[in-house]
Length: 381
Image (cartoon, rainbow, N blue to C red; front, side, top):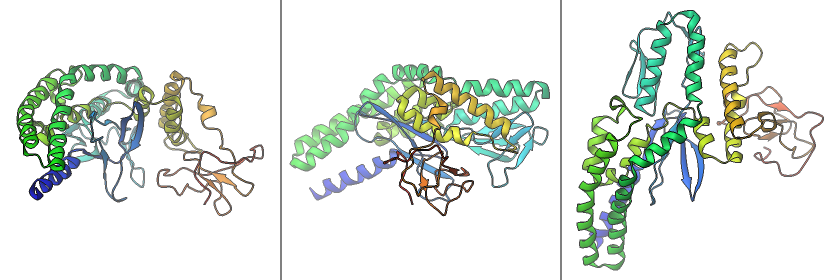
């Protein structure tokens, strides 16, 4: 039975790799845990990596991680501003014809951005090319129309219903295949009963091709996903020819479902008002224009739409951004995004040291702020 234990361990390790989704580090994953939805920023194994990972729930009932990612750069009537250290701005006249290759958007041969989904890269490249070739008078209106689509809170609910209907059979078969592979093999390892192993093997061999056919059928039924945006052929073949990949076949479809929507839009459709407020607070802070901000127009447009999304869930942005309860009299500053509080040594205007708050300046507690115990923010360093 040692060989059987080794086989079970090998299959389990390979399956865990199938649960990993390698995505750009700005990507947000949404998961359901016991009926409650949660949002998680993609995890980077190393801070220098351009890619990050989102781990899908590995146990039944299998549900794919829903992915959403913010726009990779600022889009303004004058051009686009890339998120490098110098905030390099390219005017529309400087941009070459834009196109997408798989999950990457290009201006000529210049790589502009990498995306988690093919449909997001294609949609962005198409929009930018339309803006590049349109007149200067129309660009501002077209950019606003594009942003309105990304912040439309009705779209994720509609697509979720479409997705659930089209993959209903596939999800049932994928869960059954998981139980046959890991439940049957695990029971055989524990009981050392070869009859259980034989039954699990036969059931897996029946469910495997059936699951593959259900995947192909579900792919054709995705009315919201054009054929040009289907997962590439290699991923489709692997999902059909490997039982471990077949278990996660629905993930390859869900990856594209909300690709062209802002994370806060998806969050508004899934999260509770309290969780949505926590998720949106750092986005509101980052979208606040500062004095002399070169991206003031862009930040204002993003902030206005975030506030509209929150208003649909009866969340007051002003109340959301109120200072936290002061932990003690020694605390002088706080981060408006992560709500960490700092004593002497951190002055107002300095950048928050937390990695999750890039370029967020600290704020000083006002004289009217009351001292209290147990802020919801992090501990005082």
